[in-house]
Length: 151
Length: 151
DNA sequence: TTCAGTGCAAAAACTTTGCAGGAGG
DNA sequence: CCTCCTGCAAAGTTTTTGCACTGAA
Image (cartoon, rainbow over all chains, first blue to last red; front, top):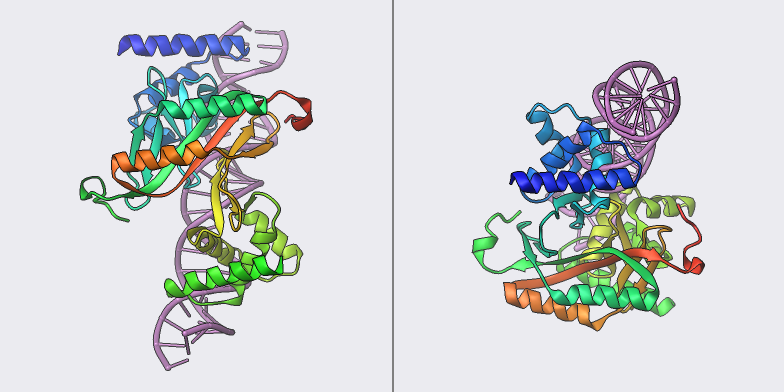
């Protein structure tokens, strides 16, 4: 755990230097909270979480830093169709996609090697340099086990 | 063109009846403007467009109606990662996905039969009844032709 | 020392809600 | 006639901006 955190710090530091951004304590504070956050979170979720834990970082800085962290690929930026921007740690995690239950909001992660292949194919074909993708499937889960909180 | 509009009206009417929603002139007015809108639009874009063309339909009604139109599959709801909810006519159109240039914002539509296959596979595997998906690829377009408006 | 980064609050952008009046079934 | 739908404006959410101060390089 300690190791993970340090490696992430290193990666972020490297990115900041490369982009000629300053190394500030606030930025690493945001990184730490983001890595510890369990699951997907919005910028404001993180702000509240940090506020609760007596951190003094402002909203503006959090928004700014999350953007940086997404750019240097420590976080993944997600959209589940509800108009909110969410983030999730992508540090030391396998690439994955999401299946979202439109009844209960449950989000199931899955991986499919085929998806990246399609991404590469299309980028090649259309002359794009790939910079990520977003793939969400929506549906209704049939078994009550994972769909008990019907809205 | 006339035909297209009438068929769309019919489809919407059928949907409204089935869901026991009322047939109102405002709802069809929104449908007409949505079908005529060129490309992707947000709810507020449509409101402004309608306001300009002397329509009196309110924001609340537009938001409400777009939701209905998305549910009955006359419109597709899209998210391109900028936190805005956009719609686009899906009436009489082939299913397609999007490749978005992160430099200039250009959106290129593409189709790949493989995507729907993956969607079906995953839904089967995880016991979901499919209700759509969203697949967006982000990248940088290399040729200046389609990337002239760098932000 | 210099200027990017920060906190704060205010503003902006988008969306939802409450209420009273109006129209569809 | 009974509701559902609508318009309007107000409130709510999430995100961005302006400004003066602070601290990294």
